[in-house]
Length: 377
Length: 186
Image (cartoon, rainbow over all chains, first blue to last red):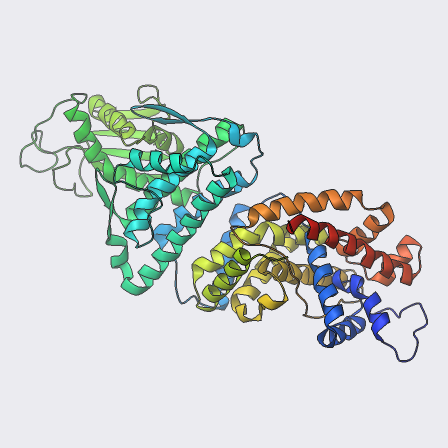
């Protein structure tokens, strides 16, 4: 500790002297003893306390020019350490993890958008066509569809109707006069409310909270799957926005990718049914025999490589029993995890996707085409 | 200066932290990690140290949510103060400089999820104001706030008296505060 270079009058600290120190104090630039004196004085002097608050506030803004986000991995280590020191009363369920990560990533992207970026048009593709929306329009769409999950959790509905397209259009129409930042705040507030509510529900009801059905209009899936569906769409549309404004974006973490691909794998038999109904798949008629029998149900092994590395046994018939783990697949399909996800979002052509196929090529091809049908407007 | 929306958010998040809601800690991190990490990194110029400060600050807030007093300022300001104090103390410890003041102090200013827009606008405004401060005031503020100097050390490095250094700090912050007040009060 260095002594103050100027002569200190008696008494050592009076009002005027301490008032003169407030600027240094607000910058944490006083030696400990003087800082203690300032703080002692502030407790009893409202006018100095008012100035101290004001200057401390101003000092806090000096650091406001740090645009760089910390390392994505830091979040995990910060939370782990804090939660180890004080265990939470209300835990966030694991199935919400990917949604939390993806909404946070999109929010960081949005934070960096300039006025002109909000005027760019993002291309939203699905297997039935392409829509063009400004970033705020994309957020209305995400908010409206997230709304069905919000509803299932007992939160207010941000939109109207049961059809997803109708819901998105309604919210976009009624948000026309809102600023992009207001739309972003609406979207973000709901994502947070959804996570908070899901955690409270899981604390109250246990694992059963994840089984509650979420009504998407044309179909319904449990809350735990809905979180994955919403995380997936958030990622894909974040990519769409990033592409429109020319910003770099990346895929989710591997552990989350695996969960998202798992949902696609569970939905694939239904998509295959749709493919057949449209007359676009090789026809099959299985009989009530075991897997492996030429006339029985069939399965394809989906091998995900790279990020989200995993293996999935996909039954080709939706109404067939689940294949036992030792089922001999009629074909194997090896594909990169990120490419597979882009295919599921109809951002890739199933006939041009780099992949490795062994066995029944028609069956593997059906699976690729069915994957693209998982996309929605 | 603080509007009702951020204050409401500050109080809500404090209640949720007190109840032990993990989701509240996550929200707090997403909201303030750039501030905490950015400030610690600016003061310490070391990624590992900045990450450690970030862990410490969020752990502290999670363990002691009751320490936050909305009457003395916003959540953002409290977290900023915790971060700056820790960063400066670490800097002074590592460089054998005298340690700074102990735990104390909050301030008033707007912030919350909904008010991030306002925060961004304020940040841009502050950068402008800082950039247009007279050179002698700017260098004094930057040297002390980011350089972790005491006013006596800053005075020595700037070749002025301690009284002048103190005066410049107070004047510089007053100019900043006035600019902020005109920004947030329509």
